[in-house]
Amino acid sequence: MPVIESTYKPPFFVKKGFVSTVYSGLVRKVSLQQERERITLPDGDFLDLDWSYSNEKSNKLIILLHGLEGHAQRPYVTGAAKLFNNNHMDAVCVNFRGCSGEDNLLYRSYHSGATEDLEAVINHAILNKKYSEIYLKGISLGGNIVLKYLGERTLVPTEIKAAVAISVPCHLSGSAKELHAFKNILFHERFKKHLVDRLKIKQKRFAEDLSIKEIESIKTLYDFDNVYTSRAHGFKNAEDYYEKCSCLQFLPKIKTPSLIINALNDSFLSAECYPVKEAKNNQNLYLEMPNHGGHVGFIDKKNIYYNEKRALEFIKTQAI
Image (tube, rainbow, N blue to C red):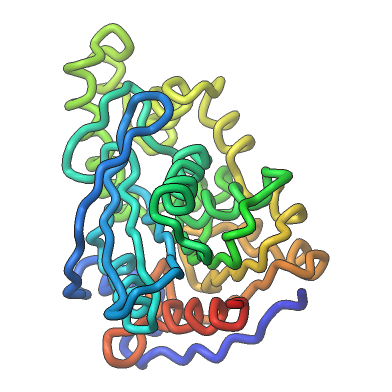
């Protein structure tokens, strides 16, 4: 579909991408009551799912996926869940492996292309929870997973009606280069610290797979993906992981109506992360590129973010 012209106009004080990104990540608060459910995955590991519900019984569900080192209580996830709950739809916020406050059981964890875990959640929602209308929304890394899932499969369950992906690093190698640039040094160091701290915990149980010396060699996020992400998940190295898991290559095959919202002032995204050609050549793919918003920083009125309102609008247009 043609690229959508964005109507997003942020408050003056958050027009800069850095400000909107930091404010949204560290300052925003959302109150939401959630109920936790643990499901067992086909490989014996587990996922913790945090559910919230509409005030009235609903057969509609939105599945929400967080970003790198996030979890199901991050405001960019709970904010969307709350809005959809208030519009007659249940929500489940997925904690990726190891992100719910407890390390997962296996040496592997989660990564940008781990669509098998999303598939497990979808199957659980259909077979065990009996939802007949399912919508997907992924943020950042979670957005890449959603789009890759939809594009890499020949058959997608008919219950899945639409998807929304926000601040998506469609081209992982390009996005990695941006994160390593000096302009993003504060974000880079924060992500790296969280990842390495969790890896140290995992190393105690899997010393035969990873040495302390190897952990000490990690100086950058690229090092982390070379030392751990790629090896733990069956890739040759970081670049092999980036190449095989970038959703960009799967966008032409998406048959489910899908909306991507990537801000033009998102410092995490490279030029390849704005898939204009792919959107123009796929009638099911919609691309919106606001001038402002930073990385998941689409601040708007009444603590409801622009991307959350747009996700609701888009999904309503696709609903039965």
